[in-house]
Structures are given as C-alpha cells and as structure tokens.
Length: 304
Length: 304
Image (cartoon, rainbow over all chains, first blue to last red; front, top):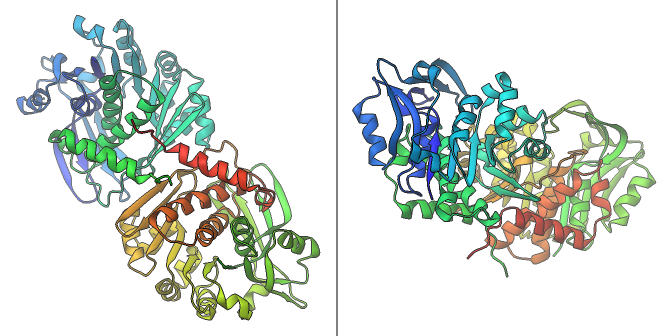
C-alpha cells in the first residue's frame, strides 16, 4: 500500500567518542524513507533541501527508489544542518549546533498523488507542520507520528492537537515521561493514549521497545550489539520500518503490530551499525528477515 | 532437589515517596528463601539474627516451611538493620543508615545436612563469606551468586575469587557496568563471563532482564506494573525464584534457564506490589504460573 514520509532532510556533523564525520546525509525523512524502501514500492518523501544538498545525496535517495516529487529544492537556500556529539555511553548526546536554513520556512503542499497515501509517517518536526500535512492526506489508513523533547517543552498545545489526529505515536522513554509527567512508563502509556494515539510505541534504546494497544502490552527486546557506531537516525529507521511493514501487510491486527515493532527494531539495529544512513543502504530482504528472526529468538521459549 | 540460601536477614526501615514503614522483615536470605519456598520443599536458610528478631518474624519463615536449623540466633546480639529511602522514580535509593550488628561477626558453619545441598543461592554478602560457605557444600549442581556495588568497589579481588567458583551471577545493569568497566552490556556480559560464571543474568529493573549463556542471549521483559509499592527485596526474590525453579526441574538446559528467568521475574513482580515480604507470603502456585504465562504473552508473536 502507498506510504508517505515527511520530516527533516539534513546534512549532519557527527561526533562519537570514536570518530568524527562531517557532511553526512541525515534527517528524519531520509532515514524513514530509506528504511521504508525495503517494504514498499516508491515511498513518497516530503521535505525540503537547499542548493547545497548535492547530486550525490539525491542519488542515494533515488537509488532506493524513493519518490522525490514531493522534495522541494529551495533556490538559494541551504539544507538543514545538525551538529551532534554523543556521550561515551552512546545513549545520550548534545546538540552542538542546529541551522534550520530551509526548514525555517518549510510548509509543504503535497503533490496530488501524495494526497492518496494510505500509510503516513510523520517524522519529527514542528507539530503544526505535521498537522498541516496530515490534513492534506485524504483517507489515511494509518498515521504514525514521531516527536521529541523540544516540541513537548515548547509547543505542547500544538503537539496535543496533532496527537488527537494520529493513530500511532512513537517516542522514547524520556519523552514519554516528559509528555505524561509520570515516571512510570505503564502509567505514562495510559495517559498518552488518552491524548489520542491508540497505538503507542515507547522506544528504550538498549532496552528495546514497548507497544501499548487496547488492553495489551508487547515487549520487544533490543538486539545485543557490542559495538554501536552511530545512533543517529535509529529512531527514524524504526518508525520507517514499523510503518512500512504495516503498509506492506495491509492490516493493523495485534499480531501485525507486534511484528512491525520487531521489523522497526531490526531496521534500527542495522542503522546503528554504521555511520549515518550507511547501515541502511545495502541490505537484502533476506538479511532483514534474518534479523527479524533473531529478535524472535531473543525472547522465545519453546513450548513442551 | 535440595536448595540452600545464604545472606542477610534484616529488620528494615523503609521510606518510599508514598509511605514509611519501620521494623519490616527484610534481608537477602529472607526474600530468597521465601521466594524459593514455592518451588522446593524446606529451603535451607543460613543466616544470623539477634535476640531482637522476635517470634513473629521467625513464624513468618516457619510458615513458609523454611528449614531454620542453619539460623543462628546470637545471644545478646542485635539483628542487622537497614534504613533506605527510595527516590520518586522508585528506581534509585539512598541508604540512610546501616547497622551491621550480628552480621559483623557472621561466619557460618553449615549443619551437616546443609552441606549436601545441590542448589546454592549466595545472597548479597561479603564475597569472603560467600566463598567460605561455598567451600562447605560438598557437590553443588548449581551455585548462584548475587553481589552489589559495595563489594565491587571495596573488595574487588575477593569478589573475583568468589566469581571463579560460581556457576551463575545475578547482578543489575549498573553493577555489570561497574564490574566490567564497560558501558555496553553485551560487552560487559562477555567480560564478566570470562571472570568465571558461565551463566549471567543482568537485571534491568523496569526494563526486564538479560540472560547470557554460551552463544545465546535471552531477553526477558518486565511486568508492566503501574504502581510499585516497595522495590526492596525484588532482586533477592528474583534470585530465589530463579535458583529454586531450576532446583525443582533439576536440569540446566537453555530452555530451563530461560524459564527460570521468567519465574524469577514473576517472583520479583509479586515482591514489589506490597511492602517488604508481604507480596511474597500468600501466593498460590496457580497465581505464580499465571504470572509466568503473562510474561510469556508479553513477548509472544504467534506463528502463522
């Protein structure tokens, strides 16, 4: 089924305790649509870049068969840039610098074809923009939203308006605690689901993810990696894999939602194994299914 | 099969953000042996208390059919006392006061019957005492060890000597990082298993637990509780349930070890639902099996 991603497209400057890289392709919509490309044909990408974005980065997206007719290349504009530095534990990071550039006036108008999308993944962005995009989509079957601390702290009312409109929210545990004002994740989940999204995924980094639906909780393990090269984009890869897997199977049963969490987790685990998008670019469907099965094995107990 | 627990027996003064309680029965050996009592007949308890311990507390242990012939009641002595205060998130706590009392001269000599124990659970204690006890057990089939930050920081060489002698270690994630000097838990597990224990369980509180064995990782979810009344003893209840389940089934297969992690998790989840040992005292085997099945459901995906 048709899949649409919206979010930032970035050029990142990344520092981990072990390596520094400049001019790395990044951004939520980038990771989401690349991850989605393994599950759906021609994922539609909505975003904006500047003239500095470059052929090479465009080709990365084209090679993943991403529909770029919703990509705005702003004349004289500069691409959004983010400079981040990860702590020694790789779980925390500081933003050294953010240059919004073309994102500061980003307010996309969807091409007609994009308005027919059935599966919509709203990457982390101003919740007002997320809402404006959502309103242009005629009859989505599933809308999935990501957000971050910044919007919870600075645009809470707008975020709550957006949350009323989406089917699913994917956030991390510290964001869930902040949004719900509850330190207990189970209580946090109940409070957040009452804000709108009936499907809630709370990502816990090295501790896996929790899926909350009506009367049910699913606990997904994390893939046991000894070395994490670069955590950038893992959350977006999760959201892309999660949403696009559901688009592929075309149903929203509890079983499919649980499998989607593991496929999302699989894409996130590939993502962190290399810098930027590198870990997501050259995967085979077999590798992805193998990783999915590894996730199953992690919590399997064979019945007698 | 025969089961032996050693560790502190305490009278606790507990403060959570919601309630304070004084003179609450506690201590590692207490929680371990009560949790074990649901899986094995007459768990053997090795410990020491003072004359202040009281009939009421003794009766709690007797009613769980615990073999108290290894319990030393020190004439004129006072029972070990711990005063702890939990933070708002219930994940962290401060020790306000510790009175070692009879524990300061605790160096148990096992009754002959106890020396025949096949399953041994060494609760958190000075690693020298753990080792001295272990040397008295003639041919254990499984030895399980708990420890804490204090011994890692202050008696590391002794702890490492003890670790060489045990089959399994159960510690929490911050202790695993401290002991291995690695922030990555997968790497930490590899380094710790190289110190001796071939079976390693890393407990992650609200994030569940990981079991590391030869070439295999098992991820157990946490039970999604909205309200945690008192976390005291949860780790000991886990160790008791884990070890005693294995004593009950009498084998150490990967499958049994994985089930043991879930039974340990089940006992820990009952423990935190009430104050002190209260959550562990009046369980039925049916309730415990139901909780075990709830853990299975948390990570189950039905096959097609």
